[in-house]
Length: 338
Image (tube, rainbow, N blue to C red):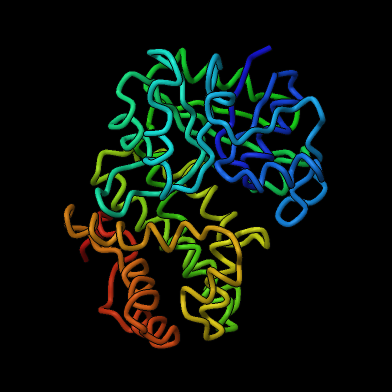
């Protein structure tokens, strides 16, 4: 049995807590919001966002960070991506050198363009940062519906340790050394999912959705490999797998926000209506800045930015994507002359 602290009492943090508790581990969930913890203690369920997933009486709930972080074999960062840095700063002095931190949030820090593991390393250089990513909605993981996911770490020993903690008959865990590729896939797919949602909101069909997913993974892998990620990673669970589920699922907050935007909502109105953190909105600007830095073209992500932040009409964005200059689908394939 391991002692595990989960920082973040949202739907994903609670779903992972339920899974780890079923695996026989001692789990404590932390939130900085006292009222949130008091409500969870009362209901023993996150009724608003994760109904049906019970929080056992034996599972710890606290708003005191030291109680959740001290003396733990593993700490899980399940807070929104834009609060990863501030949460990491709060952890200073609460844990030993070499503490394993598993980041399960997805995003790129807009101001610095750092991945979340890079942010954690900057704030907590003595910790060992790992990541978890893949097609895994909290609504399904919390109920024990079969899911496959990937853990990434610099050391194989660390990845295997986390793999053993999570693995069970409904939660299959693979491991990978390509932490960068995993993080980029997880962050950028949210931006493409906004585009897929916009297409749904406009009333477009399966043809458009399939094209967005396929061309979207090309954009993600184009930028990801330019930054040093491995192409194979973008073909796997943390690339195309995560993209498919986020673009197609009724559980996807990014797709839901995109649908509302396609129906005429502004980005802020859509996020308010979804009532959950829409990570793709925060990663969209960072993606374009990275594309400029690495000199790669991201036409779908570029149009998403124009719709989100420049007031461009969604219908016009789709039209501009369709009438771009003619291209070959895969540029490095050679033609037989004749």
